[in-house]
Amino acid sequence: MSFRNVLLSASALLCMPLYAGNVIFDINQLITGTAPASAANPWLRATFSDVAGGVQLNLQTMNL
Image 1 (tube, rainbow, N blue to C red):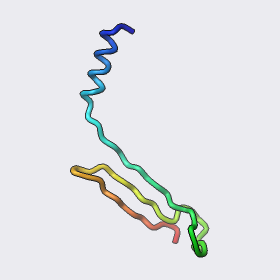
Image 2 (image 1 turned 90 degrees about the horizontal axis):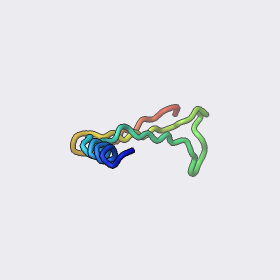
Image 3 (image 1 turned 45 degrees about the vertical axis):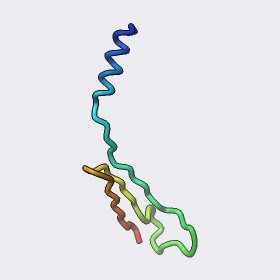
């Protein structure tokens, strides 16, 4: 690959907008106490979303 092609590829990558999608954490580990009556995992889902001006956190209880 020539230097010109590398330079064009790098400049194209730098001009692209950067943003994050969704990051999802499924929480299913017991720290203390007893497990929920339902054995299905996950018990809690935390979803982080990229929104205009910040980050949105959505907590969803599941299988409790």
